[in-house]
Image (cartoon, rainbow, N blue to C red; front, side, top):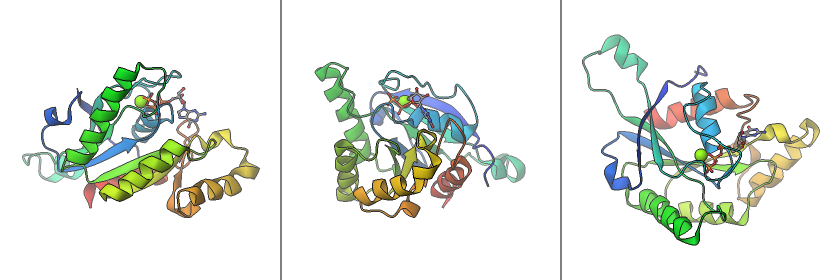
Length: 207
Ligand SMILES: Nc1nc2c(ncn2[C@@H]2O[C@H](COP(=O)(O)OP(=O)(O)OP(=O)(O)O)[C@@H](O)[C@H]2O)c(=O)[nH]1
Ligand SMILES: [Mg+2]
């Protein structure tokens, strides 16, 4: 299953208590500019489903995308659609926002991850070229602490020379206590690894 994911935008919220119920839910976590919103577009093979920008801080709300259920459309058209959500979050650690706004957004993300029962998985994005930052490591430690299962995605692999990719991926994964094969390495720009990640997302939302 590596066809584009049938994702569509559902709603935005500044507080997780405004979200309503889902049946399965993946939170997309990572520092600002790591490529979260670009990844949503690549998974769906759309260019403007999620707003992206060169300037960090493009996403400032909890943005919900639903994965359509093609089986239901074919065989059970009257059944209620299962709400399988991918939630795009603002990036953490974006220093150019005011301190006040940064604190507000950090609180919004932390409350969402800790208090919302429906969130059953996280996808944590790290920049494959930069490697895990101190904040990435803290985030992963915290997810382990709150016992939220997570899958790590290394983004922007197109920025690494192919001859250096294997070694760099191994080193980056080791920094967060993983093997390179535990991480899905992708490029939203070039399409590398996107098929594989579609399968991961599909599995996490439908298991
Ligand atoms: N070279 C390269 N650039 C990428 C890739 N994915 C994203 N980018 C670029 O990285 C920048 C940030 O991408 P976004 O998807 O907006 O990042 P984000 O994590 O959603 O950022 P916030 O919304 O601020 O948290 C944009 O200029 C993208 O074009 C990739 O695979 N390769
Ligand atoms: Mg974004």
